Image (cartoon, protein in one colour):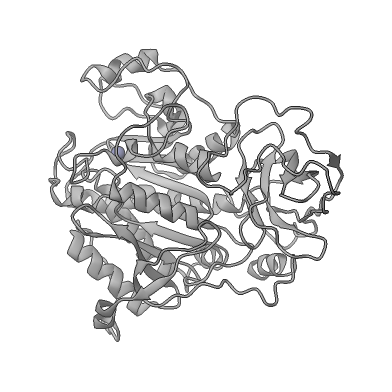
Length: 502
Ligand SMILES: [Zn+2]
């Protein structure tokens, strides 16, 4: 199974001379990328890293809350001990100067695997929602130790780069209190900003000043094309999917009665990929020990049916991270609320880990569902920043510098629209089946002189400053001028690839 997948990607395009072009060395800060999107992350040497090399002790992680220094030590020890499976980098610093650590866990930690997806988890966005921070450290430990013993984990790491950020709000965590199930102490960053209200918003203008933590995440997601993402929170037990915001006028701000009022006032705000988002959310909730049972956190509250909800239907918010990921970069992000108590006693952490372990793993594998492939010219060279969208789903996405694209889709027949500057637009029909992803390579032909070059999703100067989401139907004139079937649906793999999902 593993080899079939490798072969599938490796034979899809000849990139003999194409290396990732990424310089990594063990350690620290993300160097800025001159060319913006398309380039991956580069690493600078981290002198402190050397302290942890030649660590001989057994690799263990206790069920306790780890403050910033303890977390940093664990991450550095991990990257020193497992250099072939992990890479540690920082995407920037918090207001108080703490590193925003990300650990890649993958069979190719330092280099993007061409044709294979990058995925991410971000935890502890609200500093007092502490469970995810610890569970993500345990996930790192679990993936590394499972690589040699668990065929599923091995397959996942050989076909996926998993970027794990245990804490987006390390400053908030440091002033939070263990045992505080509710309340706001530590929720915000050191300047008092809610990081999950701090992103650009598609529906409403967000005038809040961009915080260093938010800025770092924005730069990060502009450099790596993440296919799938989980944004982890606490204080509820539900998987909540985009949109978080709604074009409707906001009725309620943040008073104490707000959530009660909104439970009556809120309406769903659904994306064109609602079927996919529901599926992703259900993947988490049904693989979680309790979430899909829809049990309410408090006797006075109502539970969520099957443990999922549309974000805006729960309560609308402006400046959330999941809408930003989806609208700006085509990354499918779901908000995972994994504990009724925001900061439970450390004694309860083993139970939380057992409740979430399978869900955390199964969710990531969903990056391999749907369609993926390469956009290339007639000579087989990759076309970067081609604008793509699934017909009738007005949410666009882009090809990477290797011409790669991914889109998570449920089984069915679809049409892919492809636009690239200087090429005749294409419309390609393809099929998605449940058992394995569809490989779809699209060759673009040069536009004749004088013909229209720009499709509806092409933007001069390139993205990612503009959202990729578009309201309303595409006009006739904007539609693909030439359509044709170029569908290289991967077939014959049924007998090689077992169902990796479920
Ligand atoms: Zn939260």
